[in-house]
Length: 164
Image 1 (tube, rainbow, N blue to C red):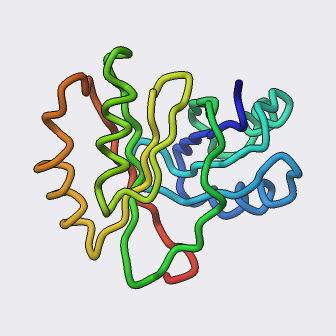
Image 2: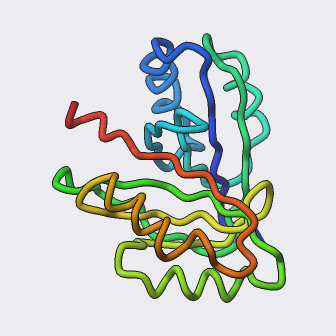
Image 3: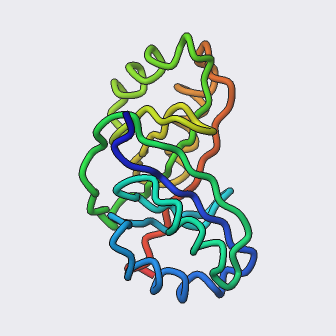
């Protein structure tokens, strides 16, 4: 059973992000959002899979692509990011037989804030915290990259817009 949806949105023109976020903030479907730098530009946390809202995003100026994944169990509440740290999302695809073991292992790592199961293009979405992006990258390289059953992952760094 889904308890919400993560919607990952890509824009071909980053100058269109601010007007898009202004529209997004008006939607009652959106619980929160994060600006990210990587394969996507914005991660939206939706109360539920909302086809009408998703279709409306396709009409935003600068919209390029999206991906949605359903959250399979209760996720952590929205997190207030501490500007003294850096954060990244890991979008993880696993061999289905190892998803739980990988999740359990990730949840045992101090720098993993949350790791939740999802349905769609990714099996898990982890939120990682570190002193620097370099330290997050090293942790991924040393502790996660070679896990049995890990097929692939995409890292998207979170951009703290209010600290820019």
